Length: 492
Image (tube, rainbow, N blue to C red):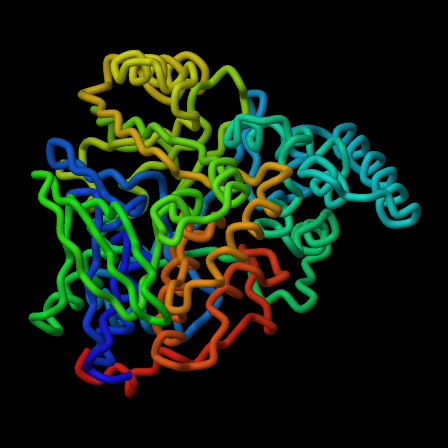
């Protein structure tokens, strides 16, 4: 690429910054426009009275060792290793996650596992022998685990996260998040002690010592330091994109004071919600594209950050809470990830994730009401704490946190993709930008590969997070993308 190239990136989340980081290393001018007053998007780390809280627990693990090496070089001595301990809270009991048959027998009893086995055999007959079609999330889970384990470990939590019955959600979610995991892999791991082609479950992961936001902050530091012409405009909202022709765009944005600016770009990278993008593009799309864009929906998130006069609450890195009468669906204890997340080691903190939709009954609760309800659930239902141990709490609200995979989402995305294909030099990337539920490492990998794509390399950045193996298992067939070698980043 020549020095006249100028790439404008809409959104300073992990995917957008990763694209900018890759381009910056090769000397391409980059401008990032971000509506928040911070970088990182959903990978932000809030600080309250010296305590640090991620917006939910974001770990770094990737089955791509080249990407892991890139991460280590980026973060340097800020990396800490965390033991992975995840459990499910179900009807007053605790179950390891991923599911272990031995653990299920121990906690639920042999009759429950017999029931699970019978329902699995029934589903195997239905979906494998008689080729029953898989039409929704419920079908996909039942085909993999049978009706009993589906009801115990997947139905309640899924419906809590998405706010819809599993029958109204796409099976794509299951194929994306638990492909390759089934009752047979569970039996192999927990009973037969064989791993087939599986090398290991992910038992530990890397994490930035001072919170996940340090990853986007480090990328932003490199982008602005590399070239004085590079810029990251915070508290700025893109209001329009005019397509003048191939690789020729005018991007207009407004700052917090209401001042409007326009920059010309040879390429535009969008991480803003896919349903928003067509509505700010010119030439304007046909009505059916607008309808498809409006149909894409997101779940919101309220994270309740609780500070406790207690040394430790649990050993978990995550606890998935199934019960519908408990307001939050997942919790983690930041101190279990990094001791630097709390200023006083005689205390600890919790992050409680309340899944909701803008305008619903949870969203309409005041911060005080949400916080008090969560404290009550911790004390009275989970028996984790005493209310007197609570020093303080803080609520953080995030819109457009989880792209919803309803039954029509794939068709709507195709309509939008067909429209966007007419804009040469326009790219979409990231969780919101592609309406794909990526982990943070997926979004960063997509961004890095998109940077390579814009530089002229023949890479499929949209192939990230589509591999047919379960995310939690390393296998010898995992992708080995060799794009992040040290010699390619000399001086970065």
